[in-house]
Length: 197
Image (tube, rainbow, N blue to C red):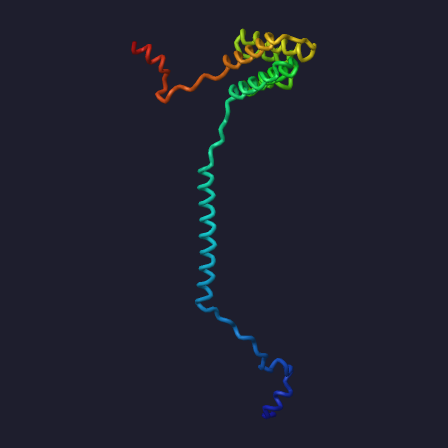
């Protein structure tokens, strides 16, 4: 038997590159100091505080913004009717404006589709509803018929007739506007005074 160690290595079937344990030098590993972590933490904290302050400022600005004022349908209708008075010297634009103001008011007040229908369609559907009283339906029908005479039949009414149309429109809005809300006490003061008397 051969006891020579050199001979064993040479006769071994393991390649020489595997037994070589010398490797190349690696770059040094940087170990972060406590100051680096401190700066990163302070930076993240500053960004968080800036975002919180911006959100708080936005919230405060939103709270200070005045609430949107909703103008009731009857007030808008009265305003349109007053604007139509400027056209009283011109029957066709006046009647168109007054008629449109009333139709839009009916639609907004009662959720009834009025402006895009003919007068006949509008009045036929209105007759089967309980939105207006019988007298109000009659007044509205006469009002729209008189407006249609000016708009489509080229009728030239005098100013007195136009003022009557205007008065009929205002009266219709006044009669159909919602009743004012009761005071905070929950009952009508006129009713209370009649009880105490």
